[in-house]
Image 1 (tube, rainbow, N blue to C red):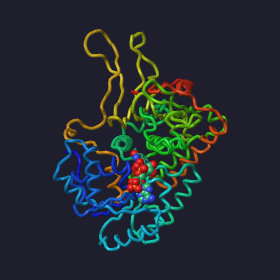
Image 2 (cartoon, rainbow, N blue to C red):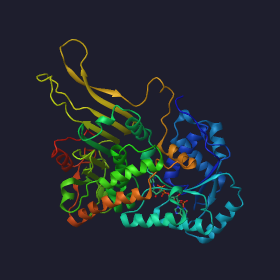
Image 3 (spheres, rainbow, N blue to C red):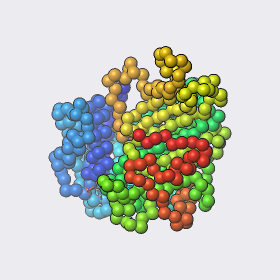
Image 4 (cartoon, helix red, strand yellow):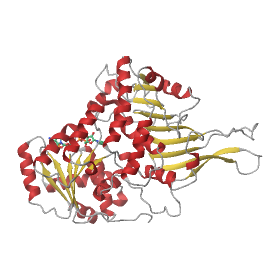
Length: 490
Ligand code: NAP
């Protein structure tokens, strides 16, 4: 085993939206995995809170089904599952109904909560944040508790500020956990280890040696049942404002003073404030919006959204400049889209060409080195380097890939944890390092808003692209202007 299990203290995790998709697909399985690892004490309590007419046995059945669906068979153990289910209960509540809050509060008041970490996880639509926070406040349930909120954290800067005001009215910043699950991925944390625990890369980590950085989050699915939300939101709000900018921040930030919440978040904020602002005609030059067409198996975006005139983007590519000493001159290309060739999320750092090739005249030209951090489908870190083709035949070069993920000797029995596992227990431990602070969220919106406004003002429809392709042609032109090429989505 390479991982170390440090049990967390007893907790009460109240999951609002307990019957929803997120709770069933991510939260319950993540808690189960950590339970079977021995990290969650048997005295912990997970309380599902939703409107559905269920009782505790009914909710345990739902949880058991969700876990059997999501957990790999090797980790399903009847006895451990039974033990895990025994810490789960259900509390019916309609959060919009004041009477429902009274009975909810009276049940909690009868429960002994001494020496427990209390967490309220809002796995519900953002329209329910306000009623829940008001309900918690009215019944004094918020005191000393921690609050977890999920994206979307606003639809623009103004709504994000309003949301922060609502959250801060009941909880101090150090009790608010804004989740971006990308930050819980092992490889993202490994990026920080590679950058800040090695002296090897730091001298190269700047515009002198890195020619461009590409951050791609491609999906082959369409809107997957989220049409109503997605058609109002689009790829920029759904993916760029949060996940892609967070990955950009971790890739570009200066070394923090220490690996702690405010050290990291201060540095990320500085990156967000250094982004080249785009508005008006800059937007047309530096961004591309796309929308997918139908093919023989899939509907087009407009058909799926049931909105034949929709101009919402299902794809975005942006050439982002960072105005600071380290990165001036190195473009960070962001790209995300639905109904692309395959599912692939990665960050690639492409280094500059060798200044002069002594291998001129050989059949294989040298390719620039790259460090590629894969977040999905398989989490890994690769170093692409040029080496000699082994054996006779003269000096022939080839590109080799070094696996820099983990030491293969100690990696034998390692189970790659899911992002939510780490994050859910970080809340109990009180560690906010991998969560977003309110000012970061606002800074990201402040950069994104003028781009969306310029798109709307232009009145232009997004460029179309073939379903399951590499994206719109305009995105390739965007990056070719600087002499770069997208990595293939594969
Ligand atoms: P969902 O499947 O629609 O679930 C919504 C939940 O809210 C249900 O459990 C529903 O319970 C509950 N609910 C609705 N109205 C309620 C009320 N008045 N009182 C109490 N409970 C109420 O949504 P989801 O996909 O789980 O997403 C939840 C949140 O997480 C959303 O903000 C979403 O954007 C965000 N998110 C989701 C994912 C994901 O993978 N699903 C990923 C990132 C972020 P009843 O049906 O029992 O009333």
